[in-house]
Amino acid sequence: MVTMMDVSREAGVSSATVSRVLTGSAGVEPATKKLVLAAVAKLGYRPNLVARGLRRQVSQVIALIITDIENPFYTAVCRGVEDSARLAGYSVILCNADRDIEKEREYLRVVEDQNASGVIISPASARKTDISNLIDRGLPVIAVDMALAAATGSVLVDNRDAGALATEYLVGKRCKRIACITGPAENSTAQDRLDGYSRAIAAAGLPVDPDLIIYANYLEDGGYHAAKDLLDLPYRPDGLFVTNNRMTVGVLRALQERGVIIPDEINVIGFDELPWALQLHPHLSLVRQPAYRIGQEAARLLIDCLAGREPSPHMVLEAELVARDGI
Figure 1 (cartoon, rainbow, N blue to C red):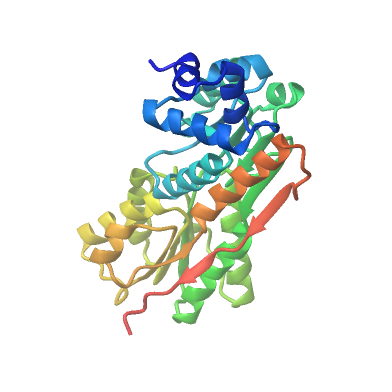
Figure 2: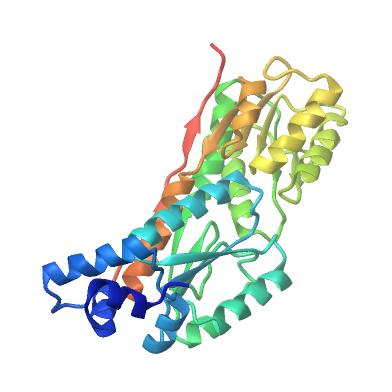
């Protein structure tokens, strides 16, 4: 392993000078800085971020805890966080909690023990996720996808407006029996999307039918079983809003098994991207969150906090309708 001493010998300067160059300290001549960086590149030196953090009582590492690594939405969020963090000189460690509150707690303890600079988290639960130890230690915590009351800041999408936007699209397609498959009842994001649906149903003067609202688990099997239940109703829905992309996969499988054609027999609108599904189902419309930007902005807020700047602590972004009417 190449050490800082190796770099100092190659550049012909002291190890203290190498350290000042790598940490961006002032007082290093441009010519000397050029020599050091050339030596770093030639030798392939990589600084020990953990050791550096121990010396400074802070690391150059951000922890990112997400709820579902298999969901393309979170993949894009991760990319946004990583790209922004690297530009600012931070590394990112990724933890996947699988919507499991106990697993999330374990990762929060690991983050606390590993001396991370700060945390970006998509909470497993607005009520049960506990970041109090991190906040008590002075670590900034930025929440994404779901608000946390104790968080330092947040980057969210207006989920009520997004739910209304999706439902209004189905109203515009002259659907009269519009169903909604939403996430777990205790999930505040799922509840907000359902609230938006309910608001749009009321505004359109359509009757409220409890049989058309199903809570599921945000996974493929949840969407599959919910769609089958809706198709088994005496009066099937002619419009369907699915509030999560993985559940949409299950819905499409159920519709295919029953031979139900989109949009001839039912109009479907999903939530977030499903690139492969759009090739197979060109009429599948969706509401899209700016996932990559959510990650970017979350990293920016966190890094601003770490630098002592005072960013806007809470940011709400807009989702967009992607209508694929096949017309």
